[in-house]
Image (tube, rainbow over all chains, first blue to last red; front, side, top):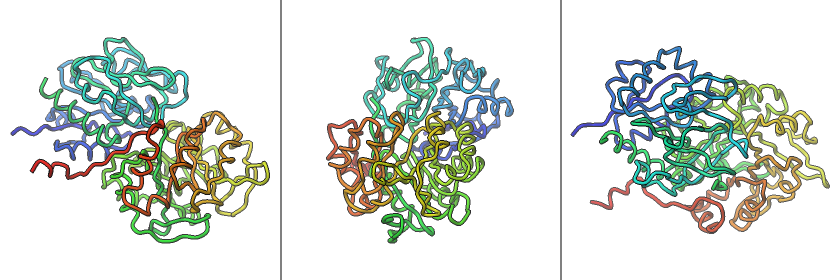
Length: 203
Length: 261
């Protein structure tokens, strides 16, 4: 039996403990590192993140991870971005100052419209039939953010509604971004992560 | 649709979880990590851990407790309160496992640090605690360290209005620990109408929680002592709130795979 190994990209921002614990509870092997050799030996890259976009991009540049992650996306290596990690996948962000992102999924990160924040549990609505997240349609997940992804509809996998609809899951090829925190979303989050990881590794 | 939240509150003093009554009497409950584990298992929407003796002794956040909690691998968002007195200590508390922070004494001492925290971590991670009481029609704000009340300062009002913090933890400190005692007038008369409130203090039953969550500016109700009197207390409250914009209760065992044996 082949174990699935997940590489949590450690770029020094926020706290990885919950993500790592959640993934290990699901039975995966987890490596946390900023080193290419360590991350190369994993099946999926996980890009977590809490904090502001500009400092996160700066941290990725300082660790020479920008080119590395972009190359892995070109190589069709599965990547999962969580919350700020999803934002980093976009072309740029307007948070604090205009900052270029990883530019893996076309689109920009802009302030929420209609509300300053989106904090709490909200429902995920799948907008693409038979996607990797289909089983999580109508489930509630934990959100905590004030900026959101805005980009072409072809990359939208799921939306949520808070005054207006906002894109909560995006996908391009093997790269997926989630606006919410599955690792803090109890059983719903666990189920989604399991389905997503299983789908990405079997694709 | 965004749900309104039921928050489980754990108050910690001298390293022990306590029942707090009126901000002056404390009865021991046990190890904080045991209560936190229960709340996580019961599926509350957020867990708020407030360590009430850090700032009084001039201390930093309780990193040892945060590390213990992090090792538990909570699947519920964690809000931490207690001893955050610098930007660095707030950042370290997040790195130690907190998802959001509550500031209280800092609002009295140096609101500019609250601004700095908000810039570093984002306003969505910052909650302002306002222990208040009503004096005739006026809302009075308590400095829990000096036990003196005064009107909420213009500086703090401005801080809240400009979006430096995302929510207010509105604490009815006089009625804390007493059943069905929260003064709803504190929420309905709160001067800033567009700021999301988390209400706490003397909130014990589903009827009261339903009334509070129906208020437009109340986004969450935090319950402390009254979740500790019976097993699955959080689910029971949620069951009684079915039909409201609240996440449904969930019952699960971490050993559910046993059913397949």
